[in-house]
Image 1 (cartoon, rainbow, N blue to C red):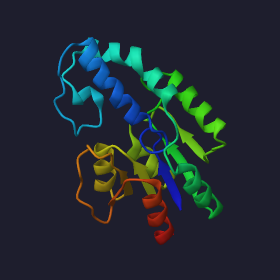
Image 2: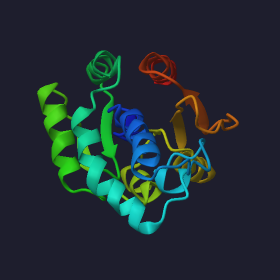
Image 3: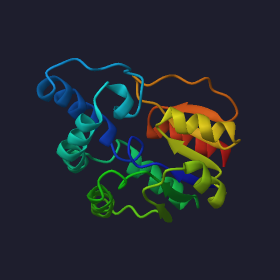
Image 4: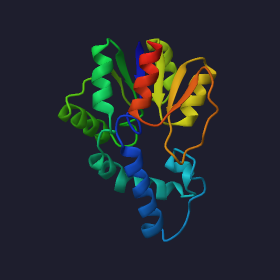
Length: 191
């Protein structure tokens, strides 16, 4: 099986770290409560910050959050099992788009943990295009906007849903997962 995989929020726990820093920035730097949509995966739409405030947040916290992040619990065990079973992994990530050094930091973290994927696509704006190009059998992502777009185009997805993100109705193209054990069960049963 050819598996497309996002990094942030799926392989690397950076989304939780970043959410912590958005709260710190909103409360301490902006002295307010600018949260408008807790279910929104993009911080740019989760808060009613100005363009300047968003840019300030990116400069101040993106790389810090990246460096503090770790691999998701259970990822290495499941990844190693699936690789031994012959599955191929293609990284399809937006990482490196806002802050170029975040790509290098992800490479460092993967190298330290001896994780090497079969192929990498960095700074991706349109994951659908890459999924089609690579003939991805299933894509694992934590962003419901991306999951919906892929599912609408008949690409099977695993929605790695954080507890506060919007719940999607499951169907033949969308299956919700919450940990790497869920992912292992689904891929093992569908291989």
